[in-house]
Length: 249
Image (cartoon, rainbow, N blue to C red; front, top):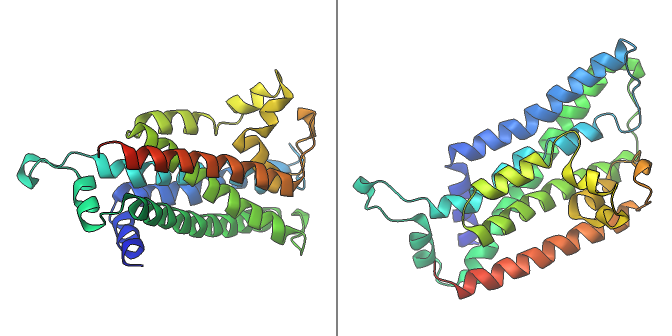
C-alpha cells in the first residue's frame, strides 16, 4: 500500500500527467460538441454511438499517462541534483522490482479509470446539453457501455505502460499509439487487408462500447472484445515484467 501511495503521489507531481488529464477530458468533450452541433444543424445524424466514438478518441490522455508514468523514471536529473535517475531511487525504496512495477501499474490503472469516468460524464453531458431533446436517451443499457469505456481507457493506459517498460523511452510509444488514435486508425485500415486485424487490442476493445462497427466484416460481442483486449494487455505486462526484472535498471 505504501508503494502504491508513493506512485500515485509521483504521478500527481508530474505536470505532464495533468496535461494528460486535461487532454483526456477536453478532447472527447470538444469533439462531441462539434459533432453534436453538426447533428443539431442537420448536417449529420446523431446515432447510438454519439459520444462514445468521441470517447474512443479521448484515450490520447491515458496514452500519455501510461507512457509518462514509467518513462519519467528514466529521465536524467540535472547536474545540480546529482545527474541520477528516479528509477535508482525508486528501486532503492522498493527493492522488489515486481512489487515496484505492480504499484506503478496499479497507480496508472486507478488514475486512468478516474480520468475515464470524468471524461465520460463530461462528454455525455455535452451531448445531452447540445442536442437537448434530440440527444440519444441514456438508460440502463448505457451502464455496461460506459463500463466498457472505462475498461478500454484503463487497458489502453496499461498497453502504453507495458510498451514503454520494454522500450525505456517515451517517444516511440507516444508516436505510435497517438498516431493510431486518429480518425482512421492504422489497425482499422488493416482490417481491410485481413479480418484478423479485428482482434488487435484497440479494434477488439472498442467493441465494448461502439455498436456501429459492422463495416469491418467481423462481428465481435462486447464480452469477447473485452476478453481479447485483456488478453493482449496481460501478455504484454507479463513480457514487460520479465524483461524489467532481468535487465539492468
